[in-house]
Image (cartoon, rainbow, N blue to C red; front, side, top):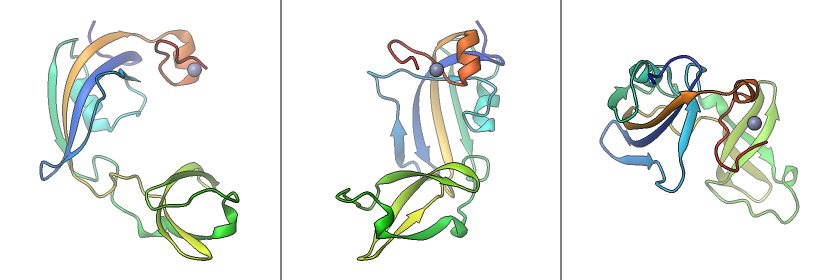
Length: 159
Ligand code: ZN
C-alpha cells in the first residue's frame, strides 16, 4: 500500500539537527505511527513520504522555518511560583501543559526563581534545522475511529 491521505504510517526515524547532532531517534520497542495528510508531521516530511511504500527509506532536510518554525521570544513568559501545585518539583527542562488564549500549549521550564518560574512556549525544535532519516515500516488505511479521534490506535493504546 502506498502512503496517501489518511493512511496510518509507521516509521523508524533518526532526527539530526543541521550540524549532524542527534536530536532523537525512534525507540525500537515502541512503534511510531501517525495519520498521513493531517499536519501531524512537518509538511515537507509528509510530502517526501507521500506515495512511498513499506521498506522505503526517505532522507529529507529542512530549515527551521519548514520544520517547527522560528523561535518567538514572545513565547517566553514568567509566572508566579504559586501557580504550580504545592510540593511539585520544578526543574529546568520540565514540561508543563497550560491553557492559553491560543488553546492547549506545552511549555518548558527554563528558569526557576524563588517566587517565579520562566517558561518557554516554543517547540523544542523551533529555530533548529532538521534532517530526518526515515524508514517506512508499515502502511495501512486508518479506521473510522482513528480518523474520528485524530490519532493512531496501536496495540493497547485505545482511548
Ligand atoms: Zn482514540
